[in-house]
Length: 113
Length: 113
DNA sequence: TAGAAGTGCAACCATACAATTGCACTTATC
DNA sequence: GATAAGTGCAATTGTATGGTTGCACTTCTA
Image 1 (cartoon, rainbow over the protein chains, first blue to last red):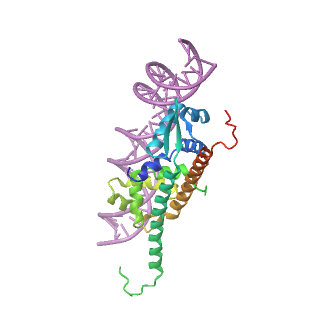
Image 2 (image 1 turned 45 degrees about the vertical axis):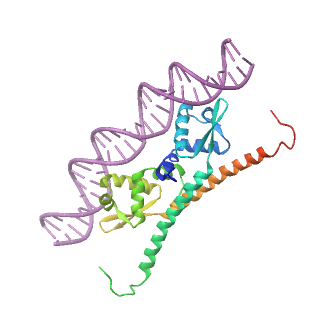
Image 3 (image 1 turned 60 degrees about the vertical axis):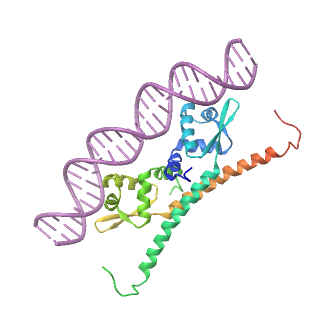
């Protein structure tokens, strides 16, 4: 597993219907059919969305008799969150360095270009 | 500001080219033309991606003479990260409650259903 | 053992979207 | 003032994707 494929995970989270699905799963594991009853889309459409979410590692299927329920993986979302936070901080750190540099009134005197 | 439109922000982060752009901006503000020189896509394509990123609040345009440079907004990414972390934790918390319940060996004795 | 409920797979459709090219307009710079 | 560099907008195109319906197959259950 390549740690956290950022674009893939974010793309999976980039669809409103998938958030609807995840929100439902957040209250308990559910099957595709059960989700289709709760949401205004067909069972097959739900199935495709679940595939996307599974490939992103955000849900895990679990066979229960004849049905397959899906569980939302909070740890995976947490991993993504940490990665995004790390990147965001590095951007901010850079901006801070720039500001410092701008405020320092040219100590050397040589205003290069 | 509508707090953090989760699907919109995630969709903006869901494209590899946009990550390329953000990565470049992470090392300093750049114009669309400058980015087009650094990446294997046309200036117009870059422009559209920058629009998407701007609408998601992830970059901010800044006019500098005849060119417009874009700055990556780390704080915005941080806000998204916090939100995702919060949601992930709630999922995990639920799972923990389930496990606890499963391990507790039916204290009441009435196995309903 | 029917039959209902669930899954899996395939075909199909409309729209969204990433990317391109082309052109007009603005703004530095020589 | 001419030219080069940058931006903005429009038209086009190919492909990805979210959605649908239909059907065969499995598995509980009445």
